[in-house]
Image (cartoon, rainbow, N blue to C red):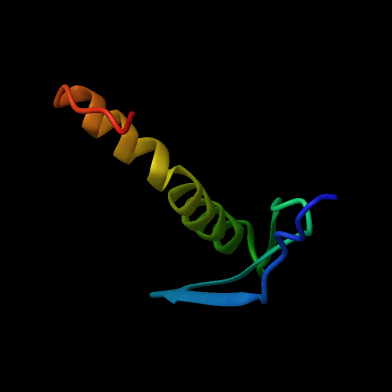
Length: 68
């Protein structure tokens, strides 16, 4: 049985950029915006959220620490 990783759409706004980000059941980001710049902004938000744990683990490894 697979988990449903979908989410309620969230609208992010900054300066002139507005993008709605939601997740499909497979956790793939689905972006909605009016321009390519809006979509690029939303893609950056999605990448940052997806990579948070990866960057934290790399930081710990760089300090010689481990979670195991």
